[in-house]
Length: 186
Image (cartoon, rainbow, N blue to C red; front, side):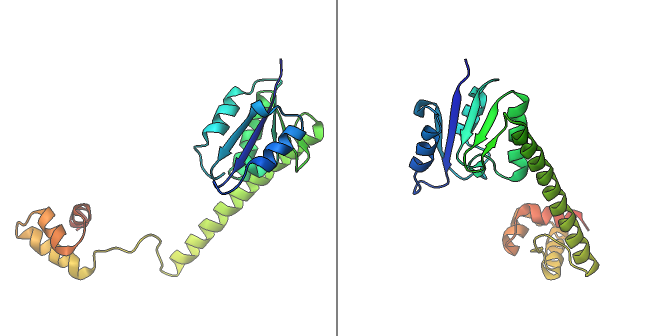
């Protein structure tokens, strides 16, 4: 027997799930089958989403008010929708009028997946281009080193004199691992 499940999520405790729950119930989802969650959509650890995704089976339908309630990003959403489709679970989004049980709904999912992949590729290309341009101008990324030439000389001198790494690090106000990393680089 197939079930219709719902998933409602708000980002903060100051927000109310009532509007989403009411819309899901109006769309035919039994209130007992609605997973309710409070937390950022960017988080990986959304226990109610994990629970509901583990619960749905072939022939079931998962209903959300909007797609952004479900996925962290376009790429994550596309992967999630593909997984549901592979398992024979229909996804319905009320706001976007998306229903993966129809051919047009499946088409939209494929377009969504292609757009997500293109978005990821463009971000990667822009990042690599920006890094290359910065390197060409003599800039390197990352956090600036705390080991100035004066500190490095003082550290090497102290270590050569036999002082312990912990004492040298404390005297220079840096971590022991920083002293070890820079003393082995010489």
